[in-house]
Length: 308
Ligand SMILES: NCc1[nH]cc(CCC(=O)O)c1CC(=O)O
Image (tube, rainbow, N blue to C red; front, side, top):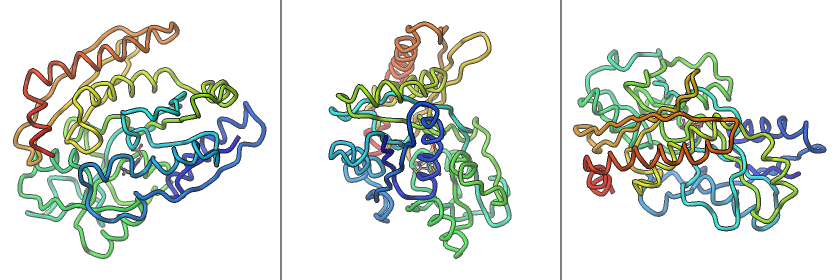
């Protein structure tokens, strides 16, 4: 079984992690690294050009039969499914939070007045501005290593990175503080993986679906259904996090912001979820829909449109 992945260190870690999970189920999975446009294009993100920058090349690799399994970071995968591929698994989810990374590990309120903070994400930029309107938030691109180098070179006082990436890359010494979820709600799918196979490949589908974790899948499905209903894509300032508590209650919390962070719509809703019956899929989707509908009533579409 050939696992197609980007060749950045984070993507390679993720592919190796999935290879480890699959090794119990199939003979010797092998990893096929590919270069994606998201790794080489350093222009700031914008509308259409940026949709699927990290995932398209890998998906094409499956279509062209260069690999059988595509491993993506869930948050990089567009909500619009590829017609010839199917997402069959979302294994265990890592830490969902974002981290503020700076040379001395400062907290957000310790950054100097008008400090320059790098992030490519409008969701992060808007939430930073909401809390610290004085900050000079600037676009930064490239993989985790490239971004860190730019900060070390003095281009930025701090950058924001997903804790999941830092942990996977085992950068334990990196000076950082976790941003509380209340301050910085993550991107839909953050910290989770999405695994696709060719729609007509029942061999791969049968094997890979065994590493699915309904808990991770249900939470990310609720988040992504909400995102898809808002037509937000991966670029709009939209944040969401779903969790399942011990009494099997699924709760989805979501935010839509203006780019400057001055407007912040927030909604949350819950439903019961039965992970060992097949109903969880519908329950998670319905919850996502419900939250998106209330956000739309509050004016989310207009906010998203204005952020384009
Ligand atoms: N957009 C790039 C990307 N895609 C997934 C991760 C980290 C892992 C994750 O969030 O699941 C990152 C880097 C980051 O946001 O810091």
